[in-house]
Image 1 (spheres, rainbow, N blue to C red):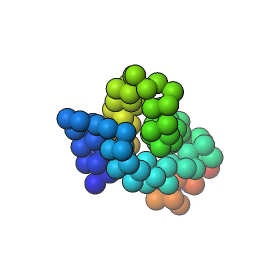
Image 2 (image 1 turned 90 degrees about the horizontal axis):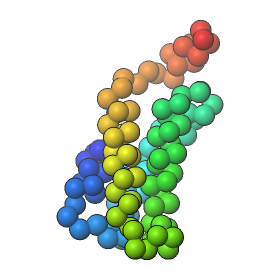
Image 3 (image 1 turned 60 degrees about the vertical axis):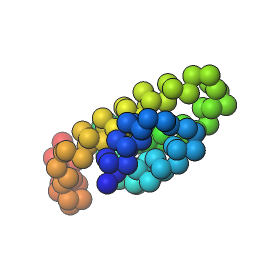
Length: 104
C-alpha cells in the first residue's frame, strides 16, 4: 500500500501542493521503520529515513522555489525508488539483527 500511494502520486497527471498530503502516510511509516538506522549503522536505512524526512518537508518548498515546484518530482521519484529497493529486501527479525551486529 505504501508503494501504491507513492507511485500514484508520481504518475498523477496534475499534482498540486495539497495533493502532497497523501504522502504523509508513506513518509511517516517509512520514518517509523528506519528511525533507528543511524544506531545500527545501516547506510541505506539512513538514506531512506532522510529522504522520507525531506518528503515531509516538501510542501514548504513552495515558499522557497515557487516557480520550480516541478523539481519535487525528482525527490518523490527518489523516494519511490528507495521504497521499492527496501521493501524488496527481506526483513530480519530484531534478534537476528542484534546477533548479526555482534558478529561484525
